[in-house]
Length: 308
Image 1: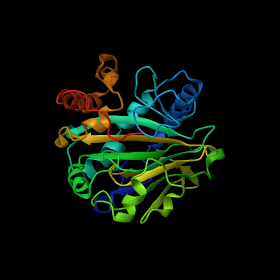
Image 2: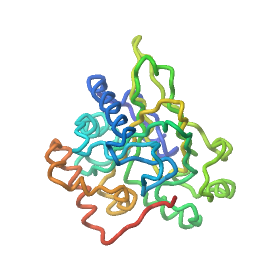
Image 3: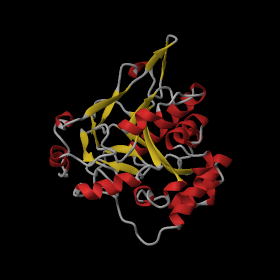
């Protein structure tokens, strides 16, 4: 499957919407895998989760409610559909086009799932994934200039008729802020640890909606927003709105160690084990080795990108 990609729009705006990024022949397996890992997370049998009350790593068990499932490719989950999609031609084609790199330069990173909490509405504050909220304008300029060697995505999965009219509208972002420091008004609303009461009160903010597309009299899932994760963004989760959104990222080796803290803070030691490597195809093994090389190239505890 070939997807038309407007790289110029992505470079200027910091995000792009791509339809049908999940190939039809793999969608059913991927959707069923999502349902199983959500059930394991809600029951407590899968401990690696994003906890309500914790916006950023490290996550803990302070609340039984969850807004995300971590480490979808982990061998203990035994869900090969996630690895197959992460290394699929469709996703690799998008990544290499947006990053302007060769396939051999791609670096495996994160594969997670964003879900709706059951008992609590939940929100994330305005943030950039790897720039602290108290960074000066000068520090922002330096950090943003380095952040050109990775892509992050949200991909809508649910396709059941029951959810056909549902939209994933959790993500809010401010176009072009991946290139420029915050204005004074934006800074005033993003210095706090508290999420906004109304994200659209932020100057320049837009709400991103992922939905099913009706093509040839059938719904096609897999609509995806790909974005630079140092764009200024936040999220709002409605506990009454069903959500299953693949959330991951991929880098390229030309960035060296610039992405190390933001990626490794999620706890990826399991990805260095042979039992994970042995499950991958040759493309996946090359991408994994790039991640391991980055990990081995940094020293000491890198800490966390952001604070809760």
